[in-house]
Image 1: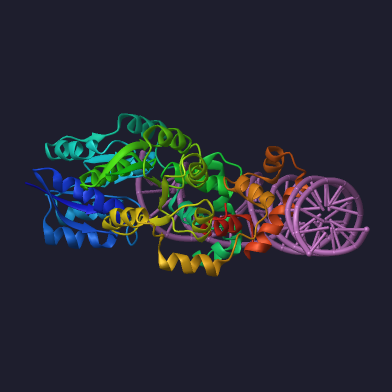
Image 2: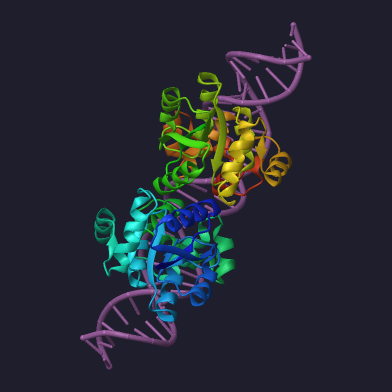
Length: 201
Length: 201
DNA sequence: GTCGAACCGTGACATTTGTCAGGTCGGATC
DNA sequence: GATCCGACCTGACAAATGTCACGGTTCGAC
């Protein structure tokens, strides 16, 4: 019997997937969590064979939780199941030790199949997405550039960001300018969108 | 037997919900579509008793499709099932003739229950969300202000927007300024976010 | 027929933003 | 030790943005 942990913040999605997986004769959902910072504790308690992790979760990113899981419970495989097939996400998932990366666009049948393949030792990755991740290259942004960009997502002014990050306004502008240059965009909003699309934030 | 139409762009979610509803003895999913502009055609073909519509769909908004359905197939009830419980969405859904408004956060059991209640003639609306919709008030933005704001979401410059909407740059700035004023924000990005949060776009 | 509201425009102004050319400092790497 | 790179900073400049006051048209409501 395959024991599954399910981390997904959307209640309806979580419930539907749990119900669906429990219908499989050889699978059983032994833990369900809605927040990223509950994943490790729930896994240590329920001892699943595999963890299905969404990426964008409240509390802690599924990618960070995946890395934690690899050290805290190495016997548990990790399968990332996410809405957004972003190149940077895939790259980070692999670096975090995930065994598979599935986007929620595909048919439901893929899910149980992916679980079985991962448990059989395979790596499950969408071929098109893998190609996109390779062609997109690694994240060109430095840590500080990411910080400044993420602080700019909600329309904060330079003064806001400078205050939040304890930087000079001129420095913030320089980082923003660098990020705009590296993303090949024209202003901070385009830079934010480009960085998000690639999973660089 | 309750015949259900399902409109949802995320394949995994759509499949899981269909499977789940088909498990109910008195329900049957007679049509599944992934795009908003296929809803009416599919409904006229399959003649469902109720249509579950997501709002943010490719092709055509679920809210617009709901209005179409009310005229093309009045016997079919509409239940909006969406990720985002935005006040403006709820208001528009009611104006479009929807019988219910459900957010995907809640437990799956709510879905079948909501369908049955709608078919029984009830209106199904989250009480907290209804209160929020009332307190938020109606959409204060004019049509043109909405146009300009939506054209600004991707970080387009004033010149871009003016070109896309065939307006003078000065006019665009005036509309943006008005939208910023009405939303009580400080710049166009905050205005966009505020308008989106309220479902005014 | 008057009124208000939405629509579209102009011109001028202060502020914010993006760019560029510099400089300091610490930690890798060779 | 020289050389890179990233983290910080400064100052100055042009461009974009946001605000304001003002004008005009159209259209529906009262």
